[in-house]
Length: 39
Length: 467
Image (cartoon, rainbow over all chains, first blue to last red; front, side):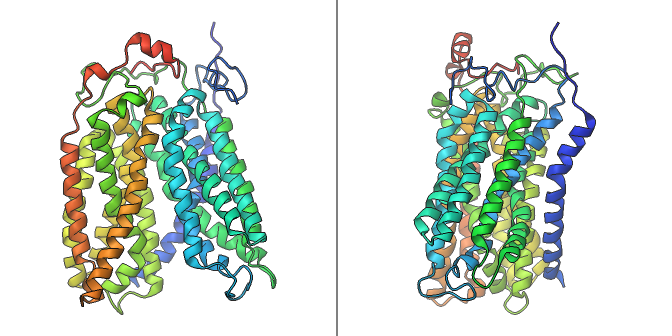
């Protein structure tokens, strides 16, 4: 019988937040700067 | 480090082959952990001014480095990215993504540390060697290392998967830019600009973060396919079920036609990215402030990043060849129209057109690996992708040269700066039309290039995925 594994949903969410949060913060800062273009 | 496929060490492919039940959605963040780090390269310009004041601290001294001297750091890094991606692709297929990502982390993080030494001792050759050469090798290996793994995990969503990772390369600058500025202001003192210390901290952060990706990456077991997914029973002419060896792929017209389509798409886009701030200020003299122009540059970066995901995702439904047709045809139309928008004073339309153009520039990169996998199969796509990225390096030279020299020629012949980009844009449109012709001639690879079952077994580089 082949060994099985399960991926913890919490680990999955943490991993996505780990890469997602810095990216979203950086994008937000860029959008704030870009708003000067339309003032 | 051994490249023996039967090696069962920590970095071996056997060790990272996923067991049944593994959730494949763990793989995109592992790829992003690497691509978001190496995407820092796009934010390197934040160091330009402080690095011209290393000795003077508050102002540049005659002995300080000049901007022209510093420009070579980025150029070296991008050149080494292209070269290492081209040469490391085949090695990557042999050793698997964990070892490749670890080596990339060592090179990229180590490059920062050596660069920090060069800044502390004010030895530019050490910065060239550190960030430019060693860091550049890390960029190239890091860029290609998770891509073929993602394609194998997502045979049903190849474009979306590669788009997610390559989007990270476009998005890395959004993290690196504010982080670098914050670190430099933290370390700044009366005797230091804080750049060397910032390099050390960034090197450590990137080394750790990229290794988190290396530790969590997994490859699918032989014969694995997503639950409930069955390979399409109807053959799509442009999606091969066979595999072509890297060396054979290089001899096919398909490889070079896609290479040229990418190169022309990059040439058109990269020239605009480099001149965006100056271009919008000259096109709308007095109406667009330097702060607003910086916002325009930020918006283009955002379009570059989002385009990498959205266009690649769309290619899963539209088809790779058709997606490339859209890049090239819509790009040509927009390049023809953009001077009129500038002449009419429509800032919003001008910004919109360029935003779409740059989103397609990014989309060209992210759709590429899926396009190559469709044509040449998934077995060696990592290596083939690496070699196709030399088109990026070539476009990176042609694009800025075209835009800068044509503009200079125009201005020196009495054309007002606000109109100096008109002919350049028309030339870019023509280049994209040539790209359409290249894309038109891309046909399925001739069966005599396909590897036989015996050849596939003999290479034993990567288990066939059954699709």
